[in-house]
Each structure stands twice: as structure tokens, then as C-alpha cells.
Length: 119
Length: 107
View (spheres, rainbow over the protein chains, first blue to last red):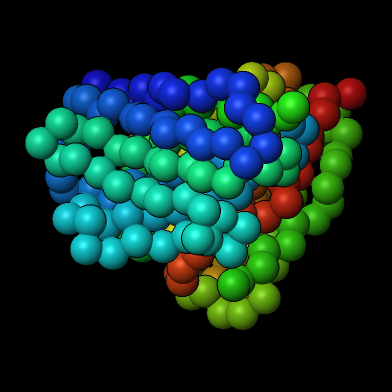
């Protein structure tokens, strides 16, 4: 069955960096576009980054553009999010998400990893 | 960026009642509109894709309609287990965006 398992969250000071990872299994990872979606405490969902199946195309929300970098390693069935210059407003649960098609819905979600930015 | 506006933000409903949630897009998105359910402390779950296509394993009381800018999620005969937040999501253009969510409470 499809599994997406995030790791790498934790407590970091403002201005710091973190790298999130997502281990995918149960499907052909290289066939799917992938995304990172976050949810601040008590708030709604925000798509922050998106990557094509071959890494040829990436996209970012304005809120993270220039600070976050999405990448993937199809040989390792893994998705990554490098987060730099973190701000308190980046505090959220970060979900790894599989896109069913390039312009389709998210059909599978990870369990999420919590990132807390605080001094 | 396409903005999705859901209404209402909150709804308190008795079991067996019908629930209707609307989602309006700031520009036409065709049928690139999907609905998710999120229960407390859980990841979101896909309910409806491409405005009206059903998802295997999702109860038939959930249905969707609409195209262009106006969309509706309907829950027929609400059950206690349907207490959750519901989100619409557009994949017509990047960045993909979500509505602000609708919380459904059971009376």
C-alpha cells in the first residue's frame, strides 16, 4: 500500500534551517509529481511547493519563495524540503503529498512532521 | 494566484440532515476542483476529485457538483463520523491553492 513517511521536523530558532525528508513506498515514485503542504496550528492547508516527476519543474508559494527548496531522489524514493531563514510564521505541520496526476488531486498524504520556529 | 472562498466557515448540523458547502474560485478553473475531509489530528483524505468524480471507499452520501467558478460539496444524511473540516482545492494552475475550510459539527 502507498506510504509516505515524513521526518526531520523539530524546534529551530528564527533564522535557522531544517531539512525535511519524505520516504515513499508502495508505488512507482518516479511516476508522480509530489508536493509539500503545510498547516499552521488551528489553521487551514497551504500548498507551499511542488515538483515534477523528473525534477524538471518546481513551484513555490510566495510565502516561502527564495527560502525553501524542494528536491527529490527517484533512486531513493525520497522527497526533500530544505528550509532556510525560518520564521515563526513557518511553524506548522508539514505534509508530504502525492499528486495523482500533474494537474490532479492529492490522493495520498503522509502523517506530517511538526516544525516549530521559536526562540 | 487563484483564491478559493468557502462558505460557510462553520456549520452545526443534526444527524441525518443534509449539508451543503460551497467553494467559489476567483477565476474559472474548469473542473480542476477537489474536496478533502480532515478529522482532528489526522491527515486530509480525498473525498471527491475533478468536481464530481467519486473516490473508491468514500461513502456515497458524499457528492460534488459544479464547474467554472462555483462548486458544491453535499453530504446527504449526515452521520456522526462526518464531524470534520472540509477543504476545497484547485489544481488548475500553480500554485495550487486550498479554500479556508469549513468545520462541520454534530449537534
